[in-house]
Length: 420
Image (tube, rainbow, N blue to C red; front, side, top):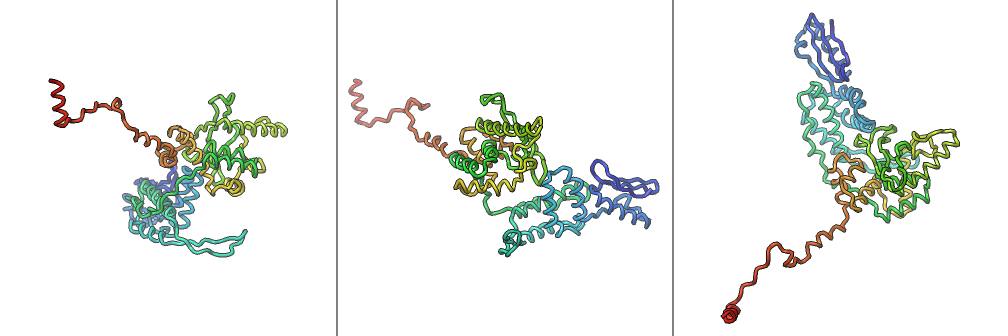
């Protein structure tokens, strides 16, 4: 007898057993279910049995979103994605929609939220060492922040629809309010000469991480994938002529935790001869160190650990303390670490590799992603195909023989006399 809350198949349900009448309703989150339970108990205590046919479910956005993070996002999303959801909820969504019941969130209220976000500003603090010394002029939130906030709201309300708490999602088809007029930043790639300059600089200022940077430009791994590679992930092959040589990329290191690669699928990245040689030299060095320490295997050891040798190399430290100084040493423009991955894809395309092969090596979810990101990097040398259109076509190459030009009256009379 009474009202109970139970968890079933990952969702929370409210079960009612009152005077022989039994009802069950999936609520979705524990917080929402507990709120509905209290409301139903109060109604039944007053003798109102109308709730048995249609319970009044009015969880707030704050309560539902908190439960959604715990029961869905934490279980099905990557740590970096969950961290992004939490930040967007804490900074923007909960302050605006928090106390509002889910059913009272309307399309107009979502538009008002976006309009407020578009004019919202945030201060940029300038620091000196550990201490903030001044504040720079405030800047408006980026369009990308608006897009991410709207996307998070839309995802949560979609789940509320699945739980039967709302009839429609007021946050759908509002993308036009978050479109930016600024063009998307295109990928940058180093030339072959610049790659050589960069690698030479790494050998001078951080020789221990030269194999890591060589792996970045010869294998196109993301920075989180690089620091997560273990020796057991590398297949060296029997010789440099053996095509069965590759890195099995199956982990990514993001937000202080190991997870799957971005596409959620492992992939094989082929080893070039130069990269194979560099990694084998590093492996032999590590094997000797392990032998002296009494270890029988290094298969589970990280290929590129931190300076201490037993912890994961922080990707941010990799960029600030090694990558950027190497660029400066090489006299190159400032680019992102991720542009080393773009360099890998660009050079493959310039060498004539098929887009399918580039897609497989880089682990893109579809070949359309490969075309969208690297299509503009296809070399201008292909203009020779257009120059070929300027070549004159000889009569023998034409499909239809050229017709003789019409004769004038004089020519016709001469031909007549000759024939006669």
